[in-house]
Length: 380
Image 1: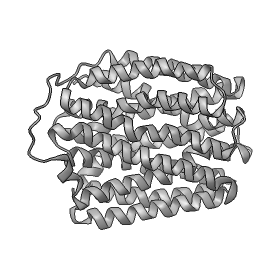
Image 2 (image 1 turned 180 degrees about the vertical axis):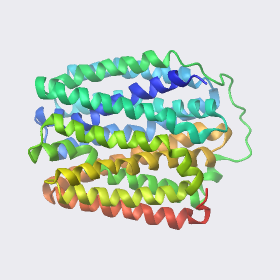
Image 3 (image 1 turned 60 degrees about the vertical axis):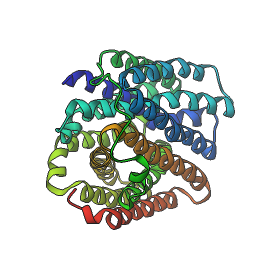
């Protein structure tokens, strides 16, 4: 198993997130966009996940050669991101963001299938490879926090471009574990799986989880800056959260084996609600904010690890690519877009506190849906 080559792709892929998630909203704000527009533009990043992964997922499942698809998508994201250096008005920025995020978002679900195929029946060890993505996020956040404080948000664009190039270069080093097309004939159809109540409940729950992240992903850095925190300290807050995620990834296989994926999902959603309440109502307490960031271990780490495990079990064989694509599309895509749009509308009209309260209620609804819909398979 090419551990380091797989890990390197995750490292650079999530390093892009380590720049975009904390600093893209600030970058857009410093370009003169208001909260509603920032929410709409951030929703564009999420919305492309609805379409892109499913198109490439279908191609990957029917044609095989998933790494060829990943390499092509990674190169395309490099080329189209260059538009961001020359566009400035809302519609031009929105189109450029839609184009580069389309190809960038499309590549990850296919790479997830490649990784899981390399792992074989050791899928609970996935988290140890994926943890390098979290390390990439941390390093990107920490480096950018210093650069943004010293050079301003203009440094964001060349930094993202450099990491996009690195994603493409690392994709060239990974060999496709199964270059032959999968057989078309299968025992279970995608349609029949999508009609199962447990599958419906799962996808609804992951959508709610990502929707609850809307105020956090879109406005957390702006919120902290408004409360007097420096960009360096804000970067450290982000890095601490992902460091907690790395730590939990190291023991994720044990949590899944002991508690089962469903119970882990319920606990993750419940802790997400607590996290949003703490951030929304106690932003003046550094100690509380530090604790809230440690909860990222649950709101992303344990949640994503359990979700990937469930998708891999629910969508076997030839359906793996589309299963991972649907997870990405409905959670990070639909859920993320709804969360970004809703938070953009609520931020100025209802206020930050109410925005985070609504996020907490959304996460609690996801916990209830998970337990009601998948409670019968709680040991899975």
